[in-house]
Amino acid sequence: MRDHKKLRAFELADELALAVYRATRTFPREEQFGLTSQMRRAAVSTPSNIVEGCARHSERDYVHFLDIAYGSCRELEYQISLSYRLGYLAGDAHASLAAACEETSKVLNGLIRSLRS
Image 1: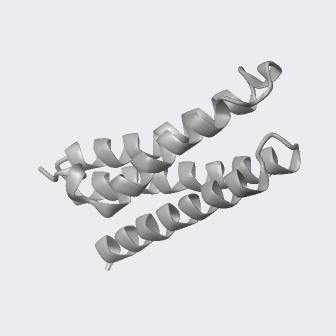
Image 2: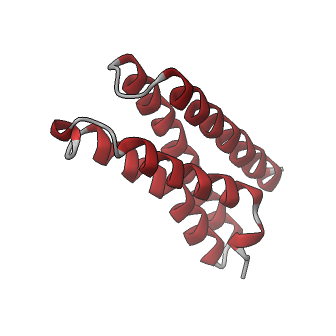
């Protein structure tokens, strides 16, 4: 069994989830069940799927869950951009979240590619 805590991708995804929760606290109340919820779900889905993949016995299942994590991270990337364009995120918060999301997706993509080769 793999230890997700030893993966850089998990560390980055976990920090990103925490950052998204902090940033969305200030979103408008009417977005509580909209964009706030969507962003939080995508942010939590990324490290959660890494953990679930690590718990799987086959390499194929492991990569499958990493693919899902990667998709959630890319979804979050769009939602961060949308939040900024709607005025819910200030420039510095947007830049920080976007950079963290990009770094997480790059590391995840690299892990997936290395496992497939």
